[in-house]
Amino acid sequence: MAVRGKDLPIRPAVEEKIDLGNWSLQTTQSHILRSQCKCNGGVQCNHCLYAETLKIPDLPEMTFDRNVLTLTHVSSGCKVQLNTLDALKLVDDKQDIIKVSYSQEWLAKRQDSSHIKNTPKPFDWTFSTAYSGTLLNSDTHELSASSTTQEPDQEKLLRRDKILHHTELVMFEDELADNGSSKLVVKCRVMPTFILVLLRHYLRVDKVMIRVQETRLFCEQNWDYFLRDVTLREASFNDLKHLQTSLVYEDEGPINQHLKVVKRVLDKVSIVECK
Image (cartoon, one colour):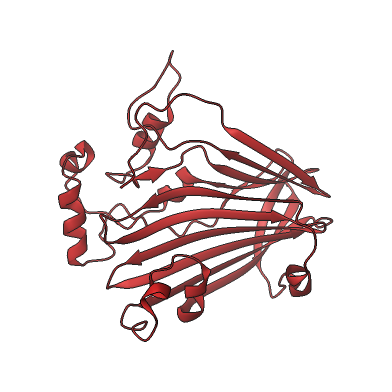
């Protein structure tokens, strides 16, 4: 089982950037969050930042605190960013959402954690998050979301054009004390005429349920807006009992078609001048 970094060597994060028309895509990727304070000269380390900012008593086993994707509208400076800290802020810190015996087993296996010992209140031990990105305004412009029926051009999405850039970032991952999986991943690809970003939270509590929330960000190179499609799917293990076991326990896309759509929100996020 993976554990958070303890004495990993300090090395610079890997940064990649690609421009396409009105947009610029940048990714930063590094090692998992350190398990001990590394504050230096009055500069707060991310270990302490996470401890002070988040109200949940523990973190996922693998928390990639410096993995970030940023999509920037170049002329306005407005951005949409996907980062781990903001995603974990949306984990419920007041109640155990999945009230099953597994949550007690999870606690039992983490009794060595000082956070658990000092924080008796319950919280969502599955690290479920409805995070769909962080909108960042500039000094002169702001991002405004409104409901839309406009969808990405499916013909463009399916065309076998050259991929200019693609990457995958794991934001966090936890095996729920061998009782399932909770994983937040970002994938993106830059094509000759558009950018597509996928943020996917996959949750499986064994013998109980599977839930997948996917957020897709899509923009064409000459657009001054982007489309944001958030779809939540879910099914109980009982609903999936007719499927092969290998498919049920596969944490990638194929299981999606067997999950019921619980909610879908499609927005057009426009860039407007500040009043």
